[in-house]
Length: 446
Image (tube, rainbow, N blue to C red; front, side):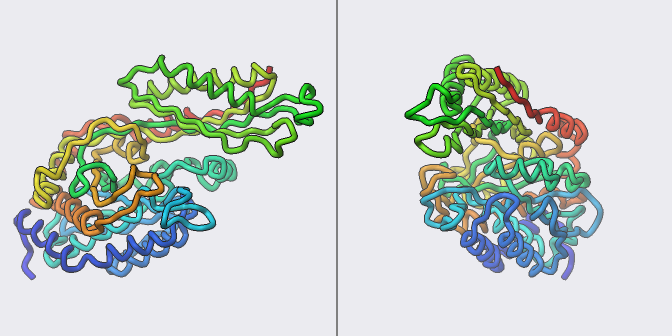
């Protein structure tokens, strides 16, 4: 077949091909929905995804950052390398209709649809005449562990040397998997309006994660409480101290701190001597995160001081704020509007959640648009389910494939423009230095 030159023609071919050949992408999403797994444990999910990619005739590099993988679609001539990302993991959501009965893991953030719309993008780009008309490559990048959960277990994996960072994309950066990538993109499903369209632009907070252990002295809770040191009381006062500081945070910094107690003692008739907590410290900027983190540490130490307990505070590097590239956002928005109409594409504003896609947007041009097709109270809720796979998988894949065409057709002129006009916030080396500086393990005893 003769090479197609027009970007418009290429996008029409891509869209039509996904419509007629996209069922495997939906099949992958629904298959993964049936065996949800949490981060760095996505064994079945990884195997199903690798098999689906190989079914397209692509070579797959596996076992990257434990369960991740990459595969490359090569264009007809040299040019930029664009990464299309998808996330493997689910998160614990007890009560979700698709939750694993043993682990409670569920795809209540619809990462299964990310895998599907990434595959749909690849299917579209493999339509006859498309790849040979593009200047550059497309890397399918499947990453583990976006949901920052099971902090204690992941920290054990870190201390054992199996990983350095608790999130999958930071691990990919550390391992050099992004070294030859020029642009990164992925599409996330949301329950927010428009249910029948797309959300574009917008920012997310960054975060550091904290694992806290209070150590007290066990004693009989009824007969001799005066001989014990109550670690649970220390944790309660620390949480009160964290709450007492909320009025000190500026609205524009979007600070979010939400601790949980994961272990509150062993038995009810013994003074708790081993109490564990986890929390995130989120903010819209690195400085806001640092400042809030210092205040949280003061509150944690105060809880220990009040009752004479010991507190062990482990602060772990998390994610950086999301900073989508404006040129990329404009290209993707135009394609989304062409698919569903301008009235169904909304501009998203500042958002309180966090994603390790933010880390990549600090290093290179990137976007993290949202697509509807899900219902429920919110992402991560037990009633969050996808009810429109055509939109969440196929249309999302079309919009992403069409954006790739914009970037790599016509000698990749648009892609080169996006790259040249983007000013990265930091280099890879600066990023790694920053993240490693957040790591802190300290113990305080009065």
